[in-house]
Length: 324
Ligand code: SF4
Ligand code: MG
Image (cartoon, rainbow, N blue to C red; front, side, top):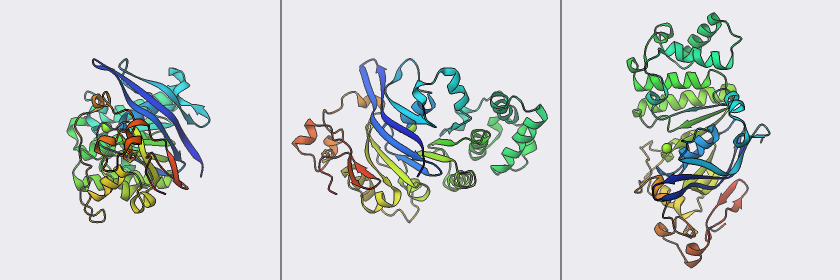
């Protein structure tokens, strides 16, 4: 399989009043061409920080990438100049967020906002071409009456329609990678399924690769090919979705899966919430970060950081005691 994005040994630090928090540490994963990779974990586990790192959109000056590479088409994204990054962000790698209201500009019409993207990346288009392309995009994401919607403002649309507009904007330049960070969390269940189906449909048609970030394991099971499970800023386990749900080896993954009654029942499968967010990454245990909650924790776990170990082809776990 061709690798489109290779994130290696990513470490991100946040400067807080209480000190430096290592919000993401030793994060390694590969996104394959034409596949949907899920990143799963509780809120504050570093999923969004990982995504924002790839987009080079980490909040400044409080956070920064202190180590690692993100290889995309042979270049390290983390080494690109701000100018070069402008050619990638939104064009080659696009991102959609949980709450489209925060990403859309409230004072501009929908049409203007989509056209803005074409102006930025395809300045050779005539304004007629840009308008036509924007309308076509809205049509493609299933928005009825696209001509009318072009003239509307974000607050005049429902949450589901706003997320469709965000997807239209994200896909306007036919990116090679779409990063979707909790794209359906703010939406009701039926709309959630429609939005995920829309993303999958585009993925299949265009062959783009997708990183789907979610705290909902049901969403992973139904939509992803591969999965990365994160815990407190590190990767706990990585596998194909089939393997992870059939043969999880990390105690954290196992715990998550047993706390879900049935994945096939399409029940809402929100991960149990732990207290704290990025700040909680301040007072971490020295060895395995899961040790305080792990039923198997042994002496070695509290002393040594577990390295990723290979369980099988395409399956790794960072646990001293995971059995193969
Ligand atoms: Fe549990 Fe130890 Fe494995 Fe960490 S390394 S998950 S504490 S058994
Ligand atoms: Mg998040």
